[in-house]
Length: 271
Image (tube, rainbow, N blue to C red):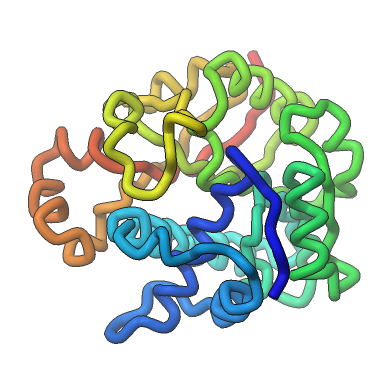
């Protein structure tokens, strides 16, 4: 087994890895099939058992994976030669689930994360590319070759760890370098930021949540290039997976404040 030395935000990558592996092997319906996650969980010397009681996190990861797999597949069906940029990728395996045979896929995360990733999930395709940098590093777009192709940017499970000012810097970087790109972004709500001490898998005393929104307008005001196309809460279409919380999500306020959301946005030229 491989020993692990990641800490703080970097260590949170093991939560979605465990959640996808659990979803793959559990009985009943599977929202995502990720045999690579199962293999990785078995080969890593890490205490995944500490997540056993994190039922809400597990469902949340399974639902967001299902939504993003569906929407990314739809995008690349229309744009088979797209360039996909997977920010804060951790040990994500989406490329293997949706590859068209023509995609160029860039995985970006902190250097220590990418070092671990390369050992476990090496770039075994000429269309897979690794970037070991912070997404706030202004140099990382130089490592992405687009050549006029459609661009799709993905960011799940990460935005809540940045401040509002850092998110403004981040979106300014994207708007400057990837005009016309589409993006799928997972966001937390301000309500959940206030309730973060109740989170069932993240130790928010060590790794606090810092940024969230309660309305689309709050996202669009971060940068004039942001144009929201659509949003989904993690309840919609999956209420049966959430138990009593799914029932409560029929109440509009609960639906829009008491779960994360997936935002589809487009980066237009700033006016």
